[in-house]
Image (cartoon, rainbow, N blue to C red; front, top):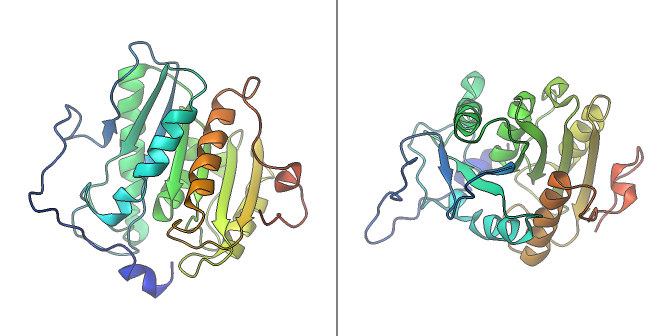
Length: 250
């Protein structure tokens, strides 16, 4: 992640900051309500952060708020009502080098999900640093696939853990925070062992997903729905996104 990414996520303090009153608040997992009594699948969202930071992650920070409309779009597009939708709750804002703190939090969240719901197939949706954490956690037994939005996938990022999983990335063509070229290279490497690996460049939009926001949100929701129910929900991306050549610009 480029140096300016250090400043990308700014803390937003409401007048009366508070923690959400959820019974999972002290764990790595928070779940959207209402929760289905007998879940058959799950979706976990992972927000962005900073390359290095020991500051605590909070739900009112911009990185977390940025995924609010994505979460709503995913919930609206679910193929059936028996899907748990939740978020990974990071302890810290930073990736923090070899510690890879968000990966530890993601694996803890997946373990908690397994305890709560059993071995439900799960799709990870990650933005920026969250996309990197999702990729690293793809080898967890619950994970069926991941949707990465403007992910931070530096050269040499491991991909062997994606074997048998679905890997899909969307990246703004004008992104100056994370590299769309590096994302494309990672998708190509993952394609050797993944169940499927695809990518699309999005024209006229950048890292924050503010330009063409509706397209980002709806496409993400449609991709999640297709990964959860591939026989009953259509594939939202063109076939060229999964080919071995150049990825298309949408």
